[in-house]
Image (cartoon, rainbow, N blue to C red; front, side, top):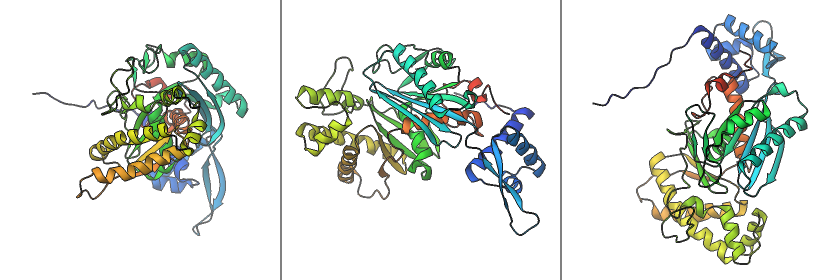
Length: 418
């Protein structure tokens, strides 16, 4: 008989105290402004415990006292709010055709943004560009560097991370040659002297949709990410589901059917290869069309370019099969479509799928997921990964959005106020 068990971890007084501080801070962030009494009622903590915690948070300038609330009973209560400028973090989204960086404040509001187009840069070039971009974002905001609590970085998946979570990373070596065993976290932390958190870009975009887009109101959804390849992120009950190896949702390597395009270096034709924007650009260029960026794709779509239309028709037939699998296996409330496809083409994908899928479903199936355009925008991955340092440092469940490749020192945070 095979015995299956899960490791149970104990706690101690210090951890419980830190957890209570995070609970109070998160309650104020989500529901504030609140009085001390309101916090005690909503957290089931004693009034004295809340008073002590609030004193610490005020001293650390994480919160501030705002207006008084007169509820008609006794003296007016002093309300507490999050100081949105108390902490910042940075998100860097890399794919082989671009690098985008954002700086967000304590409430996750974007404050600065930089983006640049790339052309298959080397690991050394990317590490240097990332370090420079992080420094530029900090300089643009003109804030004290001590307020930056970390840098979230996302790469195309799938990723393989070493047991120590830091020193050896294989960032999709087939898709990004030269990235085998590149210690991304270690290199960046040495360059920028800040904690670094690693995620794949599709999962990061799903996190971004969960925090900034329509995903705020959806408990369970699947996010389809169109970028230099095709990826996916899965949110279950409001939390990212990473899977055993941290690569749940990596659907780009599923084999295609009835598509003969092949690339010897990429092996059997697969969805990610078919939906690769760089490969689509090359295919159109080889046929004599101007196709260097998404604006060119939009123009070709408006001209009803036959090659692009055929690409859409064929691709959507493949996606329909995939979406039925997602629908039956996961049963999400919504499937979001996002990434770097132009808006008009993304809308066309949705229109085509909404025509195809009803013909493939069982007639007796009563429910099926809504399919929507992602609303967090092109920067969803950068915004999503920017959340990771703040969650690791301040959330009541530090690993709630973290995969196994975030080490314990990072989740506890070297500069924790707790």
